[in-house]
Image (cartoon, rainbow, N blue to C red; front, top):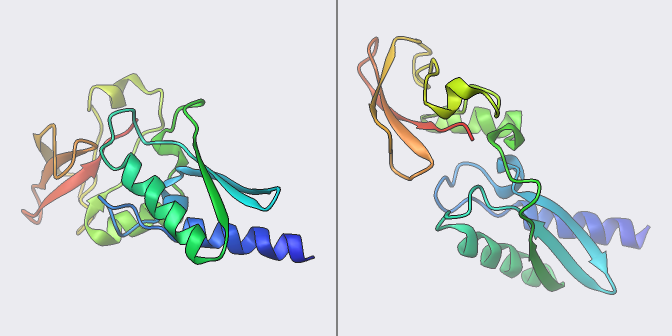
Length: 162
């Protein structure tokens, strides 16, 4: 029973870390925290970066390490590259938090050729209108594109589908 409680405490500590670029979601909701296991008294957190060039990867790993150490665990962080992360791993709660924060969540499943070329219908996170247009391939970060709603005229970021 103690091991189960320690495992839950370790998971909760690691999962509570917010994404530094999109702080409205945590690493669990973003789907990049793969597992937290207790191995010989060490909390081993496995993390998959959103993409190989993501500048936040090291910051996220360090924040998870700090959260686990503050929870009283010895820590090892392991980066897992296979299978690669996809936007399909963003939880429904994460998608709702993105929308509430003003970022349109990815709309197409990974593997869609249309999504790879940005040929998707993106709904405005503020008013829900699908009358939107892409302004720029890149938004506030490389993983987002900039859109504008033609109904409410508000600009917004779209989290690209990977």
